Length: 336
Image (cartoon, rainbow, N blue to C red; front, side, top):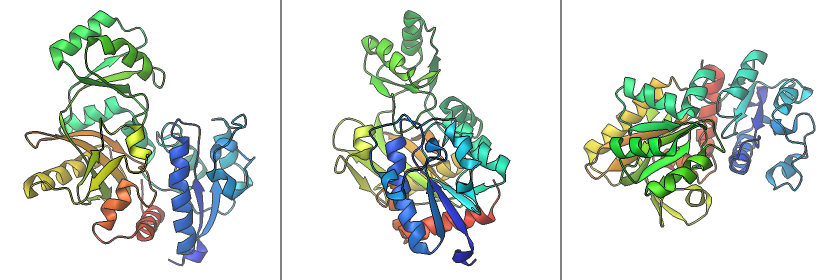
């Protein structure tokens, strides 16, 4: 494949709460794609056809008035996409990772990176993911649901009878721990559910798995080495994910060979259960008995040169640029 024959649009930004994270991924991907020799165009679909200059897309804006979900359609239907062979999706969260932009691109017949429409939508829906994990013998924590009309006393009693405190309360369809709380007692439940419901119409209440934070990247259907995340304090929340120095990363993770292989196997099964494509990151908690519990599959994980997927790729000798190139090549050649 002659790189100079292909034009790649990189989608960054978007309208989700993970907009800034997307910009960080997009900047690294943009630089890598350029250095690989592909023709590139940088697009924030939230601006529609009113795109700022390329470099300014990476900076914080003071005026968000021009950003909207409706602009996604305008951007894809415009001359911005002229002669584009592939969209490298660097969007995160709703409207970018949930099958929305994938649907629009498929209707236009434009190829894109990552998983297909259904896989993206299901992976973003934590409830549906967990149901499919169970069907595919992927171990996952027990759970309950709460809606806007929840009755606090009833929810508390269900938590106490099912798995007790602490428990994890989070939006059903957000990423980057947005809206997530660890409820330590009954007194935390109401505020935690209300916070989660600010970001979703469903709050997922999960059994809290005491243990270690682990993750496994999948590339071309195969698991890369297991990585352990060690937050400096507390849990791996938004601050620990995106603040330099707030977490330590060990890859390969220092666990027994049998546990290592089992977690890789579970990651591949989780990936397959949602029919994902090309690449993803599967997150786990490993309890004190060395039993892994799958939390979720991230179909568009963070992709800066210091993000977790590139760290796992580097552990097997795959550079950041090579990783980006493999994702591009497989997306151009493969089917969703």
